[in-house]
Image (cartoon, rainbow, N blue to C red; front, side):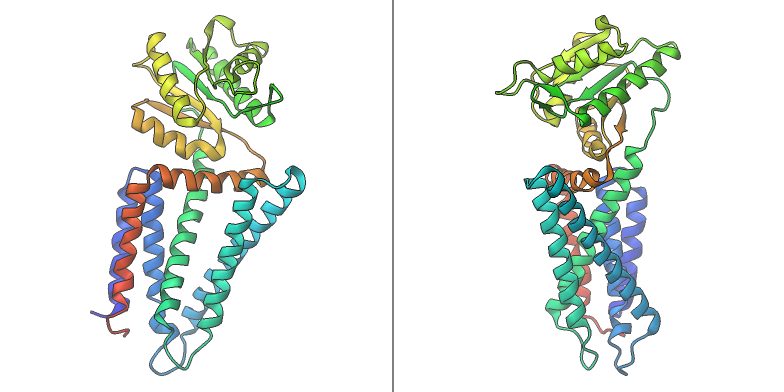
Amino acid sequence: MTMRTADAVLAVAFLLTAAVTRLPLRRCALTALAASCAGMTLVPSLWPAAGHRHPAAEAVAAAAGAAAVALALLLITDAVLLMRSQGLAAPQAATFAAGVLLAVAVGAISLDGRRTHRPPAPAWLLLALLTVYVTAFFVCFLCSTALRGRQRLRGRADSIIVLGAGLEDGKITPLLAHRLDRAVALHRTLVAAGADPVFIVSGGQGADEEESEAEAMARHAVARGVPAERVHRENHSHNTDQNLTYSAVLLKLVGRTDRRVVVVSSDFHVMRVALIMDRLGLRGTVVGSRTKLPYWLTAALREFVAIVSYDRTATLGLTALLVLPATALALPWS
């Protein structure tokens, strides 16, 4: 078996596995593995024994490189725009660093890849393999997040949970207001359809805050038409995991444990929320509120890191499968 054949078989196997996998993050990792193996099948055509590269292989490699550069520039531009409007903070710095690292990796691969008189160095091939994998993984995650963030409520729900996003000087931030307004609109829709959903607002009190986030959220929802007696406050949580864990406890207290739930958060946040809901056994749907594009990309990158860390055992296990296309490099190229 040649390297090209082995990588082609691996690419098909990973792609078929991704098609039947239920969990979105693992589907993204498997798709990235398939893309990495497919990319490695181009290597014999880019460095053939005769010394003449195949035009189609060159075109595919050039297109992949251009797409990676475009993503790097988008990350850098997004970080700079946020720094100008909001100042320097960890999320913006991380986005800028990610864009620079991707640009440097693509540049290094391109410079070394220009050599046509001899096969590329193993370090070059491994860097290319890792770069394709991480980039494809992140792009697949972005696409999945964008699609999942636009998902609408299907069917009925008996409970609405709105996740907090922090207060600013004791006031509801625009990001949190979007979540609440989306939840209020869902409440109206459900009531119009004959349901009587409970409305749970989830967010604790910070050390420098005079009241809990849930209290401010409840006031916002009631002012927009949600009946005060249907609003329940979960005011002890300080992160997403606690938001959902404590809200699940509150659902038991109000007798809604066996009903369908709709959880409302920001569109960039839906993948992690769905993962935690699955772990807690909460049946229902995640609905995202719209976020402005510049903030969305940086927030999505932060979510990518968070969700990979959250599901790190499975993600690291799948990433370790890169050893298969790396090992295939030892096989004959053609």
